[in-house]
Amino acid sequence: MGMIDLHNHLLPGIDDGAEDVGKSVELARVAVANGISHLVCTPHIHPGRYDNTPETIAAALAEFKSALLAESVALKVAAAAEVRFGLELMQGIAQQTIPFLGEWQGQKVLLLEFPHSEVPFGAEKLTQWMLQRGILPMIAHPERNKGIMKNRVKLKPFLQQGCLLQVTAASVAGQFGETARGIAADLLTEGHVTILATDAHNLTHRPPELKPGVRAAAELIGDQRAAELVTQNPWRLAEVHFA
Image (cartoon, rainbow, N blue to C red; front, side, top):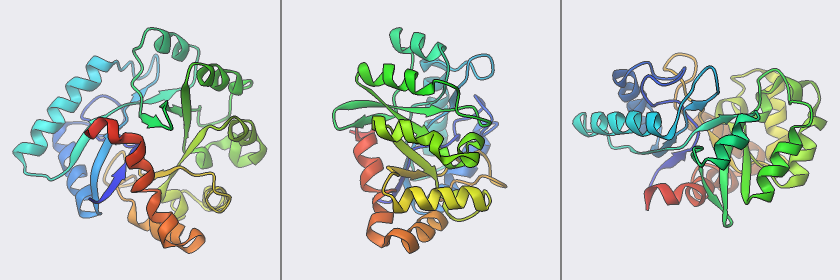
């Protein structure tokens, strides 16, 4: 089994990732060439911008799967979502319309995205609300959030609550600039990172590649721990999708 990518935008035509199924297949080929064997696609659920539902996601996944089969691309795919922070999230959880990324130590895991410019005031109240309902937030790419880039302390309440962190592999490799690289490196060495993922959107700026990030992580935390962030840990989380 190869590496597992648990955050990417390869589903065709439903957010700012792959525009159509042809692009999805091209991205899938790049992923396979980079050593990725499984991926959980995580389209945005961002009310007012990307109003995805379990139905729109399932339809795009079915289209992607049949194209992979037709093109003989050996990639196993499933789907969840990257869910934007907001009060609509509470409603979605109550109505059971929010897809979960997987499970971790008996809790359902939700891939949670903060606005890029900030960590919203009082955000830890919403994560606490989720935790009280047996839902474990995994914070998407904290190292690229401008609020955290300005002040690392903003991440502290979420770490104290036990939230998981997903760091972008390309950040560790320095492709999102020095500040993001520095924060990613600190989070890795402090042992706060659960998984590295691609957050792939396209072939040019955001390809589905994990290897450069894993190599950079290995220099900080050693080969074995770096490998676990793209194999054992994501597999534990996502096994429910591939069982």
